[in-house]
Image (cartoon, rainbow, N blue to C red; front, side):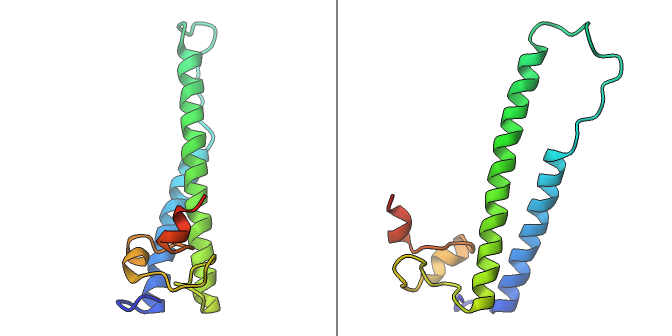
Length: 114
């Protein structure tokens, strides 16, 4: 736990962030609106534009999903009493790192390792 806040405040903050990310992910993965009347008359290149948009949306959705999983892991560590401890070396993760990135699993040194 960081010196500057309580577990309760941190948990609430992480849960709010998780809810925001879940809503954003739901928007990204919602079925596209049907374009009635669009079909054979499409311009050349429209299919490519749509494909690029889908790839971008998929990458964004994966990133958001990864952030949600990191928050879930942080919430589990808070509940287990291991929040703020590096999962690799077992040292305390500095408050500055946890404030900048509350879902950090590793200290800066271990995070830099491949």
